Length: 511
Image 1 (cartoon, rainbow, N blue to C red):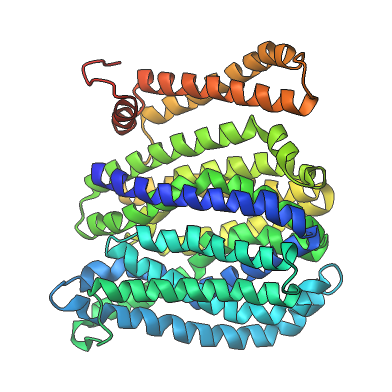
Image 2 (cartoon, rainbow, N blue to C red; image 1 turned 30 degrees about the vertical axis):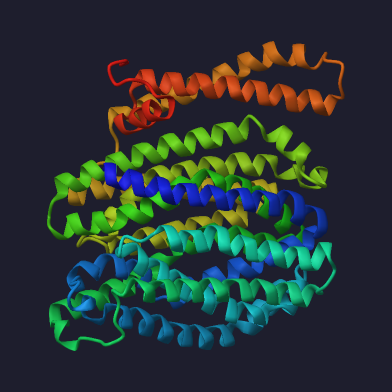
């Protein structure tokens, strides 16, 4: 697990660099120079492209991770495995175009009333989805070759810089119009896919020459059957988080989608460690399950779940205690303050997803992966029903709550099946320590508020300056306490090792 932690940390650092760029883009450019409707337009276009590309992939990204061990051979350049990862999604994209053309009238009718701007730019979804499709495929190929940092840099940093430039050209310099902004978004994802492609070529470990001999009948049958179920399972991974965007856009308009998008961006920070750790650990889970080493798989799953629960919970906690200051800092923040509760609800959903996602990976790479279909139908049906029920009554909060409830029910059912079918559990007593730590920090925060606010709010400065000062001091104090308590509780030896290294604590100075 030590090697996995090191590699995931590098990926996480890249992710947070991207978050820093995204923070500047979202909080100082987008909200300052784009209207809520324009923010909603860019969000719904990107989400629509993600939705369509997830289907067009035909499960290629997950298939790459599951079946690469069967093709793995450095000398034979993996039997032309890369060739098949290009061809399969290409045919999927052609099918997607046909389906999208048939549904175009329905889509236009659904969004024309409250989101006419989306209808105007709907045609850009097609090229955008193609670029996203192959960017995901190239990333998955890099993952199985244990090269995650460059593709992550492209996605988390390169794409955000491209979007930032597009927003500046439109809103700040007024060089391009709204049509140019949408084209700029498309160009950004095209360049991202292109860079990933050339990076794979530089590795010298891929081949465009297919090896038909390696396809035995059992293997081919397994690939086709698995791909079919992954196509359905794409709903779980990609469609679920996007349902809220479409329901809000169709039912309430792009302005509400824009507010929701900003709130969702803040909450998305919670799951950044999940992106890095799962990206590097999934090939290992696939390998151990293939070798029937379920004891190692369970140990790996417990460790991943624990570290993601700890990291995501701490990140959410510090976002949550600083929400007031965050929206005060935001340009036009008063227009987006309605998303405060959305951040809280979605943040909790992200913690659940980050902590329990590894159970989905274990099931998908086992011989019982077809259970994914059952859970996909259940999750999607529940999410749609809750959106229809809650959005008219609770607005944006209803959309966020529908995701939280759906994820909670889905993952609880999933971990039960994983335990029954392949006897893999993802929880340990250390998870209880994390819950105890978080409960203690919540109480500490309320105690600090009662002590610090009366003191800092009496300072001879503006009310805004007093709020920021109190928030920074309180957060720094709680962060210091959380590090000390986490170390003393010995929640994780890997975390304790990082703390000792960061603060130069001698190993003999033990808890």
